[in-house]
Length: 238
Ligand code: PEP
Ligand code: MN
Image 1 (cartoon, helix red, strand yellow):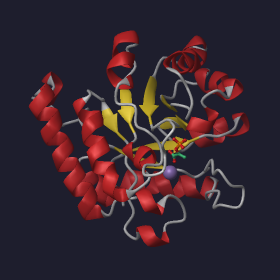
Image 2 (cartoon, protein in one colour):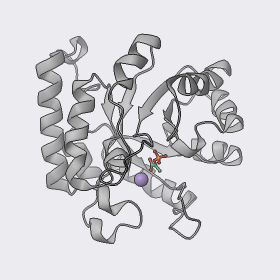
Image 3 (spheres, protein in one colour):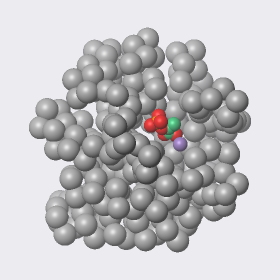
């Protein structure tokens, strides 16, 4: 999957070695072994690693393997964890809590920044609304320009957890891209039917290729080529 990600322009390989599953009986992740696999796969393709950290006591250990911490939606207001990652210099992708207001997100980010770590990205992954029968969550595309107005933090869209179903992932990714998101984080799997987590929303390699091509086309149409991209490797648009 690292090869597929890289071939389609991704620069960061995300995987969850510690999984915040809604049920305690669902697959909980491979722990430190999973982080080793992730690091190895990313290194093989010259990619950075993004991995979730769920508890204070794991911050130091996860830091050995990851380039970016993910704070999951369920931990967005785990203030102790936010303070701990705030004391590191490792970039943090902070996922919006499923019922978090914009002010809740800003305050959560502030807990990280207050410790001295200003390398923060905010990820919109869909919120709970009155109708989540057909999509897993409701993607709030509006939060992209709002956060861009209120903060300097890059806003990332996670269309996978918003959609919940493969067929809706690409349209949401494109909506987030059009709204001005700085990046997308997308779940991919070569055999989604047998995925241990979130298989219903995983894109197969050919589906991810299609998403990536369309997202780049939308980005270039609306925002043109970033200045830094004209003379360096593409970095910011995937
Ligand atoms: C995830 O990113 O794998 C995840 C569990 O997402 P969220 O915290 O947004 O539910
Ligand atoms: Mn997931």
